[in-house]
Image (cartoon, rainbow, N blue to C red; front, side):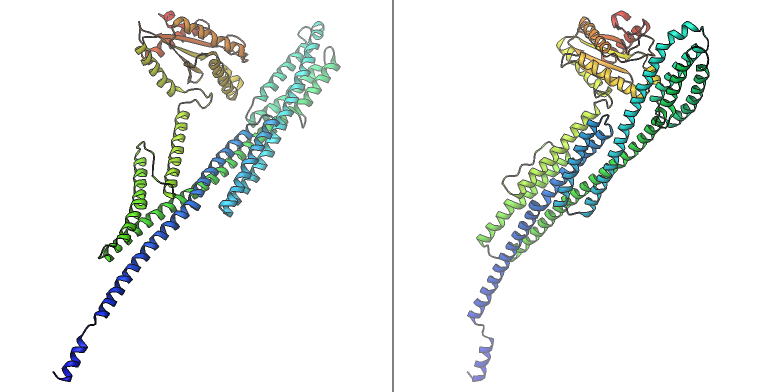
Length: 551
């Protein structure tokens, strides 16, 4: 073998040490890459969970608390607008101040949002001006009350003078003066219930004419000095700059400003609440995006690790299994539970462990529980009458069908009382719809107080009609309860001078009973009670009749 051939063989020769070194270096590089990928994945999970636990979840919880506080602030402003006394106003102002301080402190500490802070400052300023309007309103109301009392005292003095006038004049100027004075004071009382500014202004011009007529009659007949003095005093009480009618005009203007400012404040608070809700949704979306990106990135890294691993490394496989079992599977389980809850399944998210994932599951449970509670409240509101607070027609239909079916199974009686307020249209026409609403509330309260059993049920049937459902009650028992209700309403003594029955509010009532001998479905039972009610109306009102009376 020549020297040239030996040099060629050395050039093609591969050193085993070099191969093993290269292989070992490659394996070591792959192992280090695998370790780096695993470590990087764990760091991503840690960063994501820390961000959720330390920022996202607290922000969601605080946003929910601030949203609830905003709702309470809204209720407090409504309470302030409905204040009828200085004490009620102070209570409402104290509540508003507490809620605003809480909102400002939490908002500044947690969100550092200048727009939210500016919004709260605007709300505070508007509420301050709104409070000033309420104060003016209460002051004017008190002044009106004082003027009204002064006019009534003046009228009492005039009534005391009337017998002396009647002794000295027979249907002359004295009688005309007395009659005109009574008419004027009656118009004054009517003006106090007016809610339209134009009507009050027209009445202002009418009172000027009435005062001139009074002065003309006062200058004739007996006791001219006393009549003129009373007439001038009445004119001052009604027409002067701080008289009753200017105060009434000022009251209506203030009421309009109060309503406008109240709506504006409500809109500001609602806008603030919507901002909080939007912030909470942004945080929730951020958490969802983080979870989604983390899962996607983890899946890619697992695929890469699977390609890199040509030889199973037990420790690395165990680490992957650990991640798969304790993180990914639990997140997927939580995701499936959330999807099931969205579909309407009645389940609770339960994730084993004690870490950020279980915290997330618990927060989700709390969130769904809050939604369910709100749904229950909405359901309750849909079954309640907004004015009187008792059950409405929908709740009545549900309850009546239930009680009749129950009475059929138990072979017992169930009675209903259908009530209608006598001459209620005259009440509304003369006292106003606001007074009519208050009357309905009083009647509803009287009926509830007259029902002694928790199983008895009262609902507003519509307009001025009410219905009581009396389970396990025969005709005699129903009549006893009807007597209790009529006595309770009579004791309330709600004034109704325009009633054709009595000077107080009364009701007429129809009674119908379903029992083992004669089972009546809801429509038939209500129809019988309605016929009995018409019989009671035809017989003079202020009484009750049963369906056996109508037969």
